[in-house]
Amino acid sequence: MKALTIRQPWAAAIAHGTKRTENCSWPVPSKHLGARILIHAAADKDRTRRPSHECPRVLTDNIGIWPDDRSAILAVATLTECHFGQGPDCCTPWGMQGYFHWTLANVIALPEPIPAKGDLGFWTPPADVLDAVLAQQTEAAQ
Image (tube, rainbow, N blue to C red; front, side, top):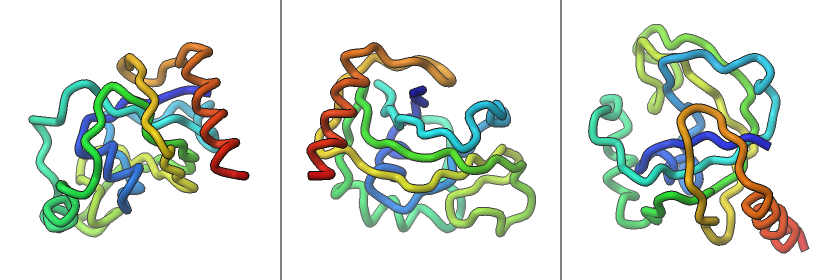
């Protein structure tokens, strides 16, 4: 299973909120479409991007509620689609024009964040991290 590192507060918005579109400058490699991936919160928060005009309220209403975990696996999701965002209503409120929109589904937040050092793009977590994810999913299913 691959992991994708996403800066905060976006990783928390995926794991604990309603964000189901990740904005990227590159398209999803086709081999990852339909795959389950791990959502990893980066060590740093996003200081460069601005949210779209509609999602600041969603962020403002939840910033103090969502955990601000860093350098950790937060959730598991299915990467279902990728398209180029055009027009102001594409994937609102989370989609940004001029970026590829990676659509996520079946997002399941892990009960406890799993510490892990991330990497750019898709990366393969070490076996102990994958084992910890599996253990939490098994416990949650029981």
